[in-house]
Length: 152
Image 1 (spheres, rainbow, N blue to C red):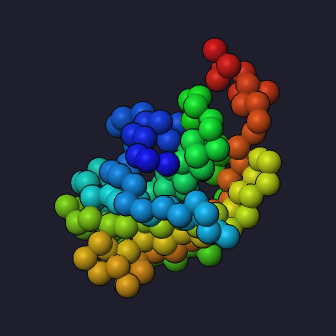
Image 2: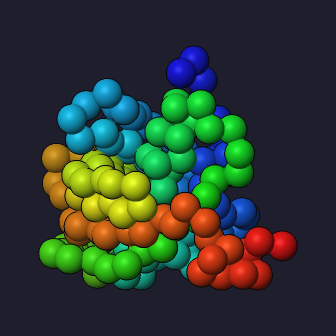
Image 3: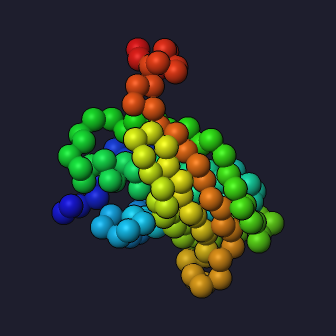
């Protein structure tokens, strides 16, 4: 893949709900494909529980990038966060204006389900992990079967 597509082509989100700023690195060829994204904390998204959304969007960007690498050129397919396990938040709040790195590794995937191991660290102290979680997601082949309004 010569260049990274814009986040709007990887995520089934639109501004202002795209919370991550950019893809920093990725490895689609690894046994557990991974992607690292960056976010600069903003006042409206600084509570520690927003870590789950940062992780979910990073995992979605990984899936969207893998789809693109496999030749899929349509709009990103929506997925659903089914649950979060092993959530550890070692920070009370994200510091407004500070840059953070979010990494998602795809630890399991079948036709419609996937699990991701995620972590967040401050960009200026990447060895100090501030949040971790395992995310489980579901991406149906036909979303209109679940949410008919999405077919319109």
